[in-house]
Length: 285
Image (cartoon, rainbow, N blue to C red):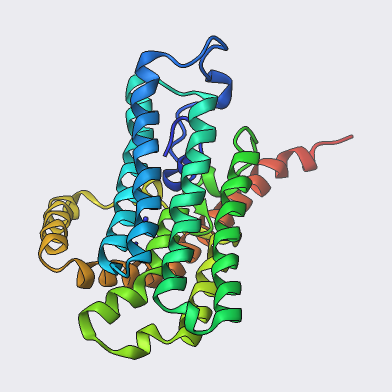
């Protein structure tokens, strides 16, 4: 499936809309009452992701994966609520990191291992570990660079690598297709091992990926786009697995476009820098 926190946890990376820095954290006296709401939502997202593991142990795969998706939805709104309430805090950032690592790294890895990868015990478990570790590394990389001024991808409105919730959604794509088609190939542990390894690499890659900030539709298509989003929501209610499959495929198909678009911005920046430096180079010593 494809794609937060102004508390500046890793989910700020997912929408690249960081409304400040950790220097705007809550005072040392503790959390304010208004800061508790976004943190409570983050905790709820963590509970949803971990409860998904419980359902996977009972082989209730649909509920397990839907709970991880619910965690992604909650994770997408906690940061917006934090910005709305001006409730940024260091505590929120750390809680967000922990919740993301467990909900979108550990939970999907265990669910997919129980669903398919355990039929290939050694390599399957290796792939599950790789996915969980890469998710944690991605989140740590973002946290380490929160206050770094030079972030070329972010300044251009792009993300670096595939966001953690999106990575979890993409990892589940074979399950979506297996549920709808019944084709056992999608559950093949060898293919699942390769698939999970690919998604893990995409999460920690340095490639520029599209974010909401990089999508600026023309005015002529905005009404149509709103209608499309509404229809997509209806499709999600009626045919969730086909819809999630389509979203995953569309996201993957748009990745080359994201690279092309960022490359064009990068070239334009170089030209502007060269043009601004040219007069200075021509001045007499």
